[in-house]
Amino acid sequence: MKILVVEDNKDIQKLLRLNLIQENFEVIQAFDGEEGLSLAKESSPDLILLDINLPKINGIELCRQLKSNPALRHIPILILTVRKEEVDRIIGFELGAEDYVAKPFSPRELILRIKAILRRQDKPQGFLRLEAGDLSLDENSFEVKVAGKVKPLTSTEFKLLKYLMLNKGRLLSRENLLHNVWGYNHEIDSRTVDAHIKSLRRKIPSRKVKIATIIGMGYKLSEDV
Image (cartoon, rainbow, N blue to C red; front, side, top):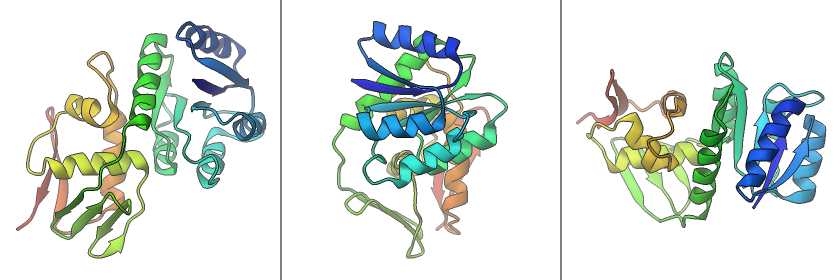
């Protein structure tokens, strides 16, 4: 499978290339946002590793352009970022990025995340219709509505909401969500769940359904009756 790495740091590029090739991935390298966009169009990679702080076109704008292009929007994006860039990570998620890896990162963890994302792309979608309070989710049309109004979600947000609705009223740990929504195993400790929950709460302001935080334990979707 083919991975496009868009990163301006040559040492990080070298590290990523070495580890990806060891896992039998084909690696394409871009060192700025303009080159990354051009190579994405030319090579149609299976996944894009995208740095935030890029010359010419920054990572957030590049993510926006990729996800607004019908020929490229299906390509999963894994953001490379430093820990202080929480706002950029959330914006990336809202634009459609699958996940992020904070620098400095573990090459093994990065590979595990990449493989999990690629496995999710291969899974066929079901056609469930779920309802809770004034919230509805339809897999056939890929629509989520609150009180009859469509609320656009990214693919990951959609999957997360679906799992929460399927387990309505049940406490779900972060580890449970990482395993069942992201496909990650116990070797990965990620705060991506928290960022996606925050984004979901903002995007689906339901008066009858809430996603509660159970401190130190996890999350629970509950319905007011």
